[in-house]
Image 1 (cartoon, rainbow, N blue to C red):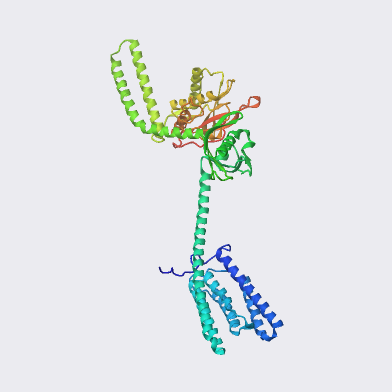
Image 2 (image 1 turned 90 degrees about the vertical axis):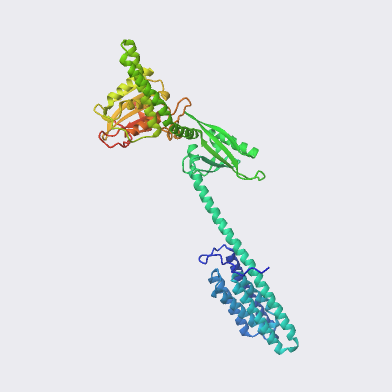
Length: 569
């Protein structure tokens, strides 16, 4: 099998910007420090021989050579920085290795102090093969082999009898340096590849961590990271919102600190004790409000055999889950609405037509009264079908411009009929302050919006007199209608889904009332919203929930009216 081609040990590393903590930098500093140490050792050795062994004839210029070599190695160590050599000829490495070869070969040729300096040639060979390219490694080994053979030839001129042994020793040493250069270069290349792979893996891990952080931050479900002591290490914004925390990022959050969080703490302790994932529904009690229900899932971050682990807790608001389910139901209803419309409209048309034909032949007043009742209810059913179809299709366009409607008169009539039907006249207060206001709104639709808002207020208001209040007013050219009740404040999670279909805080409600109000308002260019405000003055002032409708100005384009904070009543 042929040997793999020799490559630069760090050819895969980009030339600009070398990481100081990389293996290349550490090896470079190690070699440069070794050169300084060898220079110091040579200087100390020759100075010692010069002082204590004058018979060895150590000249002063050899000591000067060692001093010069020490200064050169120290300057390179202090003032230069490592650069990846790549596959090209690097003057920095050649000048460094060249200085070593010059100093060591001079000492070897002169046999200063009768010492064999050939082992020192291993330093430039290793430095060229580990830190340089394959060409530099083999070139350095070849240069050292030539120097050793030249030294053997020079020595054989003085002692011819030992020439064969000297040439054999020089050849074996040169061959060893070639093998050392080859093996060192291969190990260096492998180290470079592994370091590059590790760097790419680390970069991919950092990128994945950033992506995971972004995903967790944008999740609608809450995520908590809790240890065995119940201390929260991390919480995403959704979890802070669900738990009623601000976004300041408290450094230490403990589940045991808040009595409302104890069900979650118990579930965390159960997860750590059984060392397996848990799943449960948790209700967090709140003062003056209905409990908030969550679907909680827990997972451990480490293997069951490890002592230290963290519990990752996923929180899902059950109301939001139910809202998504209701939205899916609405989509299914929309797909079925066309077929249902045809199935209902055709029998209604046949009933209305047959009733009209039969009414022409009726003479008795009682029978004509029954026929009129059939006609009236058939028209009512047809109107309901049309409204449901309009809502399911969300048809905001295509409606004819309704005639101007007197707001106060329509609101007063609707409130009077509602109070009589629900027997809630003692709890209702009506303040009409827009006597000349004309709003572009269908009369039946306005009545339906107002009745839905009153029904919603009646469901949560107290039995005290004036617990439900209806007011009209005009501000900045826009007429407005408000329905206020003294019910408990709504939770933030409920407020976000108030006008979504099939969403309700009570199981007995269909969750379509506020949604129909919003759709009817948007079809007429009006806007509807919710706020928590105080109504009344002095001792009669009370906080309550207020739904407001802002109508578009008469003659304005059919678009949603701009909402405003207060309506003058």
